[in-house]
Image (cartoon, rainbow, N blue to C red; front, top):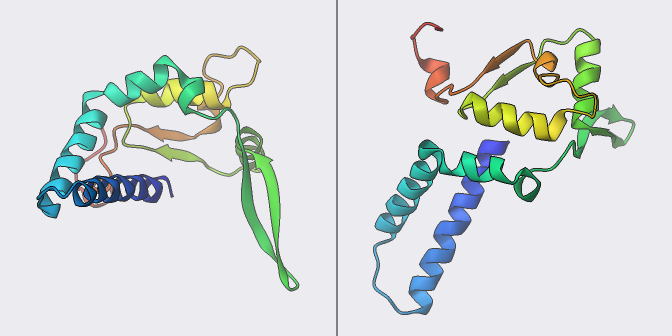
Length: 153
């Protein structure tokens, strides 16, 4: 879901830039616009600039333990929804014996900083978010992670 949201943001950026060129009556090649924006986004992600900026002021970019709507089940003629905070939901899943994992392309320092900001309560436990997950895999290199035959290290 996050990946789809990021793609939507990229598509909107491409559309805005192309619209600017059209409005300004500038000649351009749409494939070059796509390539340039894609390379710029990759650079910002791979260089760590984005991660450092977000962690420098997480309140500006991240939401703390937000409420989410979780589709629970169909009941009669309507869908039932459960409002829950992310931390509470993860704790409930863990308490029910569910195995939870986090798989991300982001580096661990970024995941740790973001998760500590977003999920840790005021208990003062440094890695309490980590206890919610049975497995955390950072820098996973998705989507190749799913098809690669390289062993875990």
